[in-house]
Length: 286
Image (cartoon, rainbow, N blue to C red; front, top):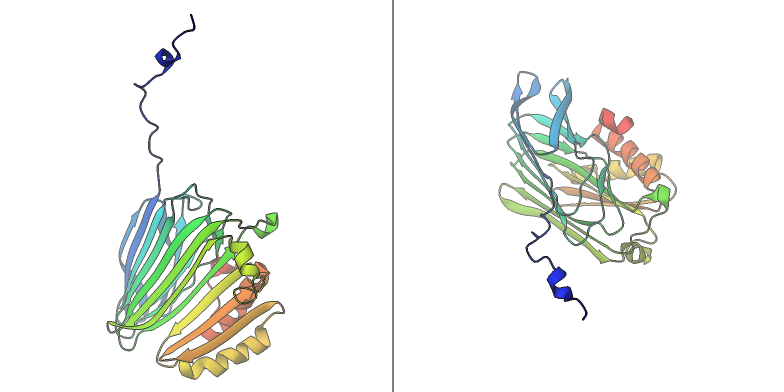
């Protein structure tokens, strides 16, 4: 007589435990004290940390560090910055951020900034690298006082170029929402879902690009700076890096596209340095 296989089942076994996910958060508030900008409050949670390598005359440079070494599916990261009246904060990251492949869950990365009267934020993270099958939903929000200034730059690389990686499938959603005195003045959304590399091959979408970036200047003189920005592009641009810029309603927006992420990064660094009138954060130069 054949054994009863059902008796070999183990229904009493516990289900596999839920995977541990990273939940990182940094909240920072800076104020102007005398001629400089200083940290007034700082809180950190999970693997996200903030380091302060330099306090210059009137400016505070801060570097975000992800001690987890990357972002996996289901991880959530949040950065909140409050820039007090007359203060100037430069926020960057210690290295390019890696978004690993996902088995279904999306990673979430959010940044929110509040700028008081006469405040300035330079948001200059290094690039985000999406691995094949990565799923990332990213959001950047800022609320500005009437005379505050925001200069933001975000770059994303689709696949590890050293491995000639293609994104056969993945998800990338990116949303920007900027308000001045509570009124929405800039909104932008980008979404890729599916075979991202193949989509970027299309002429109307990416023309074969492997990297893209957005530069946004929200300031009283942003529109007046358009010709100066274009002049920097003419003198500091690189072959194979396509950049277009326009300005309206107190915003200057530039788009970067390239099949060569390194060339795009180098071009952006040169143009940003010239446009800002200051060198890029030191971590960009390492």
